[in-house]
Image 1 (tube, helix red, strand yellow):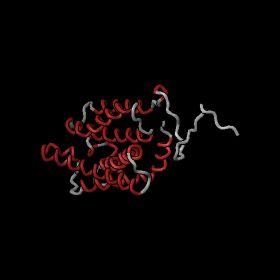
Image 2: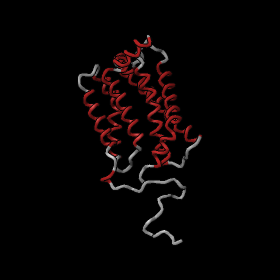
Image 3: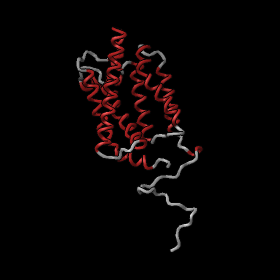
Length: 228
């Protein structure tokens, strides 16, 4: 049998997984840009008469930074669509919490009344997302930029980074509380729970583990579908 013509190279790399050929810039998916734009619009709308302007600024600041980074890296280092979609959902959670403050989000009151809970648990959702979404983003960066391969060490590293990020956020909240005194009550959103910081870190840890368990295989497929 004659060998394959030289102008039809194989689309399999040395390790075996199939990779899509690099696409021209004009054919890049527009969904990430649409999600970034929608998050920007939601951010602007949330700034209209928020419950507490200072709390809103503190809560949405990570969204502002993330939008700038994602927009700057979209062409040179695009993420998977899964990562963009998760980041969009996380941005909405932060934006809504910033507008109302986490202790006053209407959806949280509805859940509180439905299940006869003692507090508004919307902030708990935010801290689960604080582990769930970064876990996929960190996992993607490690797989693409480091020698780490899928396996136990990747799980441990992703989980440790997410837990460290959650602990760092709690330290930042503590620093703001010390600096602002009583003015940081809305930002902290403890709602009288003395174990709020510990719950926040535990939920972020749970979210990080759940993301890798539930979405690991899906994420691997999305990674293989990225342009070479």
